[in-house]
Length: 442
Image (spheres, rainbow, N blue to C red):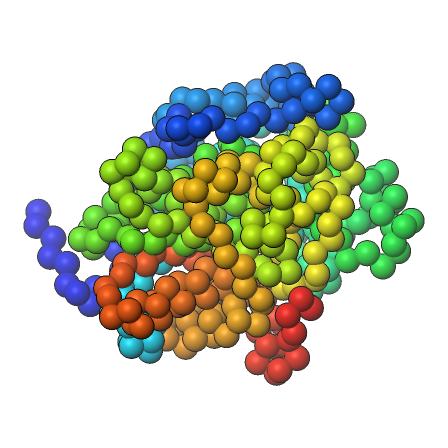
């Protein structure tokens, strides 16, 4: 069958038969290996036994694997078919508004049941936990997208789920809480009085707005102290980034349908999962020296781990209970300003993303939230989609790349990840449209 692509085609949709069959593991292609996690006491590389209280063995195996392709179980692929493959869309309306010669494409991950990319790993983690007899999962969530995804996946696989939600988001996004509870999960504002870590934070600061680092401490503590419970993480670690590579694999095929190759690939970055999911499959060719694509990770100016943090070993949580990870970090005790992009309020960055930045394969940029909402509103008015505050950072960078192409008078193909919709974030849009939103504030 011959498919004719027009210059104004907006959507590129793969058939279900083209759903990826394997996850892509970038660790296999690194020219310099990623520094290993360390035991906090001995400073020696940890073994699988250190992670066994938190994760099932198959996820631990994936975490340390150097195998290039890891097969996706058929039951996981069947669950993905509810919403995958997701569409690739060309932002023709935005291009016209910007009067740019650049062509802008975005991978629309907002079409999942949870409204974001997060189910790509939530489904996999729920499956692997159930396969090893786990009946209960506990996690943290920032803006609520990860909590929503795990609640959805838990309901699908019959696993009880508890979510520690960063307090400022718990208060900002009541309908996100209701969404999580609709899938049968329990939601607790963090810091809470249910863990030693939470009680310690509240004793020092009863009005704490919370952070992902604090919520991780609470979730890890509960998982480590209950025999029936494992911990599920929505970003940062290698196995999570691995599951997200279905995004980039689909996007490569869809860009082929469009007859294009991206000059720059963009994703917002808090912990690193949606950026990695889109970028890593494209990066394989860059690592092999056959592609010169640029890769841009975009973060909030109020939580700038990549652009202002140190690249060093640090704890992944506030209480200091996790192994030490080499990553770009602002310090595990850093509490970000209560911006609306709650999913980007993390003190560190995925070790694999940090390593690629350190090696010069990935660029980083930070924006204040008002500039991002300005971009998100322009995107909404030209493309008809309300983006999550997190995704607005990628939109801001894509617009700036398109404007730079206009100034240079050059064609440029831009690809970004629309990691989620903003339907539960209208209070943030209301604040911005009403003139009451300041940088670094809720």
